[in-house]
Length: 383
Image 1: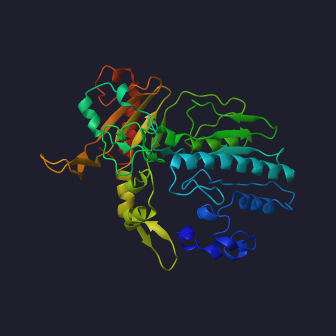
Image 2: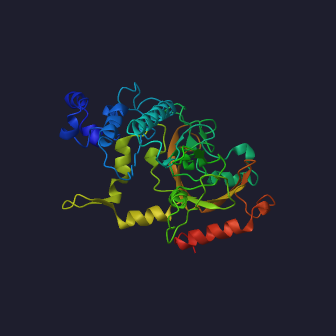
Image 3: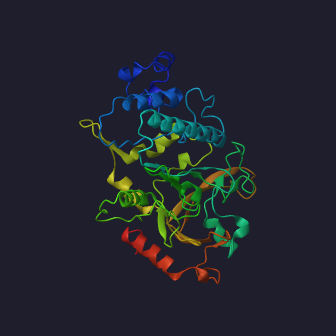
């Protein structure tokens, strides 16, 4: 919203100057105002913050948001109408360069060598590309009629007006972040540590880790008391190896207006604005009780081990195209209700099924379904 209301020539010009930090504190150096966000301005703000530091320990938290939607920024040459995957690649390259500049600033300030650095990402993203989901038709084992329960998405590079259900709407793609548990790319994270001895450790690609592991790991390294209640695992920085365990993932709010090749902000607002209450006295915006209930009720959940993943999908409502009548070639949109179902995926072979009574499913460790059912029941998702 800030980006839209401040996007006019004079404002865009003023935001190029450092004094605008005082005049427009919410626009200057704000990644949300994409068209005037310049990575160099953010680095300058860090540089200013590191000047004349007092002689005491420093805790510095920096959030680099270039690799977040809308995937373009000032002087990038891209815009929101370009293909998202092309813009995303450009933004990842830019945030990599920006992170290098952050390290350079820490070195100039004389604190890099004695610092512990934790590099994390909060999530991955699916862009409507083939294999953005971890399932594929050719790897399915079971009754093919069950596949109709799986939601299909339109490939990002498909024609805008295409209704080709065979080639352009597929089950092996997805859009968004944290809204489809079968799209494991949405849940991948970067995690690396640099200790005070300059040793850099990164997690193995196949390690089952969560962001809940960061705090216990850092406390363990500093030889500080562990937190009273913690779900994460305290890794040793000299032994960042995979451990045998299961982890849970879930979805957040699902908004159909963002599960498309081009995110239309007006449509997102129309679809979701009723979920919020605005307090004119405090200026706070909060989710309504009905919205919270709906989000929890409609969450997808999954449990992941080293070899298997078991996902649970609640009752859902899918839009789809169908002939207007038996004698017409004209297509219309309709909605169908899908009952709850499980999806079991072998992470090593890619084979999957929706039939938990099949011989294929018998190879799954029994406790995985038991743990997932318990987790869902505790959230009141089913009895």
